[in-house]
Image (cartoon, rainbow, N blue to C red; front, top):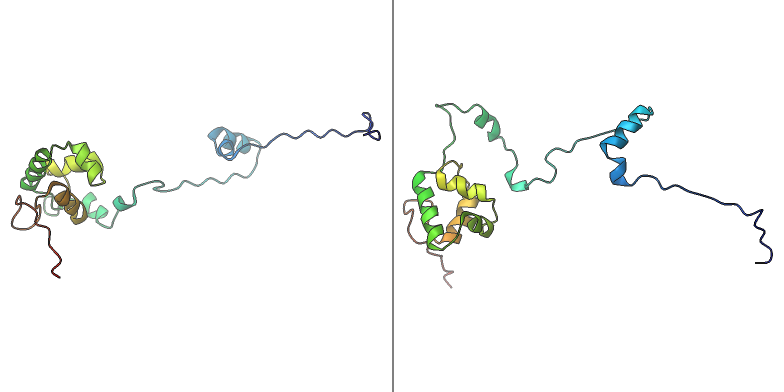
Length: 149
């Protein structure tokens, strides 16, 4: 340490650059554009969405839906069975939705007959409330098939 001299020592000061979040903010993009820098922005489509509810080919048909061409909705009879089965188990719409891993609005749509039937969702609801929702015997208790060994 005897060799070091305070007058000849070099001092290097560095300023940290912006973090990733700060660099992507609207203010940072606007200031970069004012300075004339090249800025590339892209918007991700459907980022962070639930993948099982993606837009399908039937969307165009739904947009053109008329009286002659319309998608079949869940019958009110099925909605009433879902409601009765849910209440018999002492579940709210939110509880049932959590149990079948869907949004509460999906259960509400099925109960009031607004939903377009989805066999996957119908199967989950059938198992949760223990009643058949498809076929001839709607409203009867669901009989689990045993593996005949």
